[in-house]
Amino acid sequence: MALCRGAGLLLRTLLPGNPLLFPAACRTQSSVSGVLVPRTSLTSPPWPEQLPPVCEAEDARRQAAVVSTVNGSIERQDYGRLFAVVHFASRQWKVTGEDLILIENHLEAGCGETIRLEKVLLVGAEDFTLVGRPLLGRDLVRVEATVIEKTESWPKVHMRFWKRHRYQRKMIIVQPQTVLRINSIELAPRLS
Amino acid sequence: MTSRGTPSRFLQSVLQNGVGRYVCQLKRLSIIFSKNAQSSLGVRGFIEEGVVDYAKYNPSTVVYVSPQSCRIPKIVAEYLNGNVREEIVTSKTSIQISEVLTKLTNQSGLDIIRLRKPFHTDNPSIQGQWHPFTNRPPCIGPIRPQKQDTEQGLSNI
Image 1 (spheres, each protein chain N blue to C red):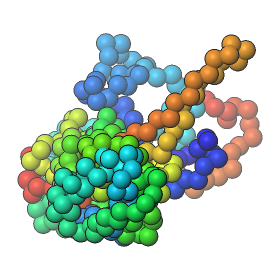
Image 2 (image 1 turned 180 degrees about the horizontal axis):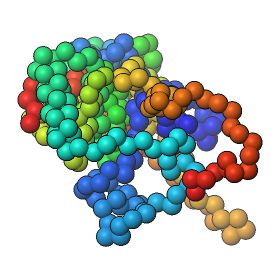
Image 3 (image 1 turned 180 degrees about the vertical axis):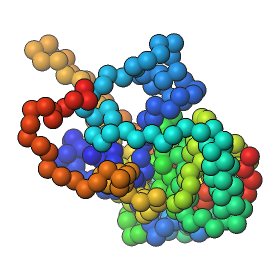
């Protein structure tokens, strides 16, 4: 159940789009149409599905209303704290301001330097979310982080042992680590 | 030892370093070496060439150079959170010693033990933490005990 917690989720999503970013086992845009995932008791909620009657003009009007509300909210900058899902170091992180991230490799930036995390997949506030397909534009979101610490990991023991073969090898692995502090997430006041 | 047998901690920073300005966590460096022993050859070379430049580039760190009669040359690093780390630099070259110093400068003084999670947030939930009633439409009605008839089994499969 640790996956349910919001703090610093490592998301492995199944969103359609760039297969390099989303290596999903079941693609929702494959050539086989119809049932792609086996139906189980948890496929759909236990209550009967109630679809509202479909009307295209009504849908378009609602969509325009939602877009204008979100645009107005962004222009007035009256959202509270923002969170973002950022793709960095081959992992996805759910990130807010003032939180810490540990990267298990060496970054070129020195301690105290600011980095911009460019691959942003999703940005959300309390009332709205902006979902990228698969990435959001660079001029829309800006996520900045500072390098706080560049250490080495604790010495991990890597041992291979085959029983009854008199074979054992022991290696101590120490990996470089970088700690980033996310400084801010900013939204540009312009949406299409 | 295994990660179960060794102590562990959560990812943290010293006094929210980085939220405002970044502060270098290294407080004091003491280089203990011998004037004549062979093991301190690299240290003596580093002190001739590199120590002054290092101290100039890191103005927030105080560097003490103390020649003593000792068999093992050491670098003792003290950090702002009170931790002390000793690195033994026997028979290291000047370049290796400067790398050791860079590593010590970039570290914060927190223990180098297993980190439980590679992230830390003080605000884990912004849109509200999920609970089973988050997206449940109220038109369904309240929760009632399930009927005991066999016809009311899992008919959705």
